[in-house]
Image 1 (tube, rainbow, N blue to C red):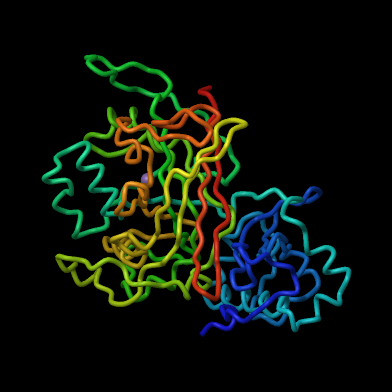
Image 2 (image 1 turned 30 degrees about the horizontal axis):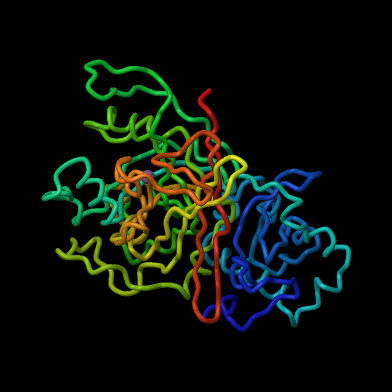
Length: 424
Ligand code: MN
């Protein structure tokens, strides 16, 4: 077992039992203190820990890291570039410093006072500079629902779907961190029974419940990453709200796929949970039938049991849970996604992001978008405060949450929230 994952460990920082951030999590993020520049941090309970202060006081000096400037950068890309053994060593150092038995930092009052900051006193910044962004389509339930609605219930999945992880290349410039509000997009739509399109604000703004993984290692152009080596490249995961304008999408997506309907904003949770912290929650994925080609073949626990939920809160209103799903339903694993991404020799870079696709489960209360939950607007969703929704209204806030739980440990992602503002 990885020592930092030991469920017996306790921290001298107080952690509530239902916290997403026990000492076994130790995610990475970028904080901006009230007076100061953005810098790398981790989190235990409700305390953000400034890694630049720990570096100032020499707590990383014993590590085999030549350039400690990675702990002072406004993005995590340089830290990720150190490679997987360093990710693990940094996490182990943090685990050692903050465990109950450890007194080194606890007794250094100056370092402790500078490094530990209540999370309400920091602003969370975008943790990585995203280079390229791929969005997969890896939930069989979601792909089937969309196929039933838009194509043919008898042939809901395209013939390729069970042979490769379908995806498209998205826009990275508009990926933003939780708390960033997004204006309702304008675009072309074809009104019902009209013969010509109009330009206007989207009437069908939707969320997509996704998670994304982030690569922390480069590959070379012309090389493919063998599936058994893919995990060397993956740093961690975040919650991912891939906002979508369904009316714009419907008119524009043929023949090349989604374009402006998806690029007006996608929102990530601010703390990147490392793949190492997620190891205790590995599970087997769904059985793949027909068998996949050898370059996609991988046996064992390649999926993750991550409970997910989405809620909607009207302006000054009450929160309503819209759906509960689980990452483990995904048909294609992160290993298969990355092996497929590079099979043609396309190189990947540090900070690239890979959305899972909407994560729908088997039951109607587990569907990961309003398109499916309201079944194209034919089944309005009741709100706790009264009224209903088919799609997102102006000033509604969408909140995504995710966590792993077994009988000894809870590891979570915190929240990913965004408010939809009126069109500009
Ligand atoms: Mn998507």
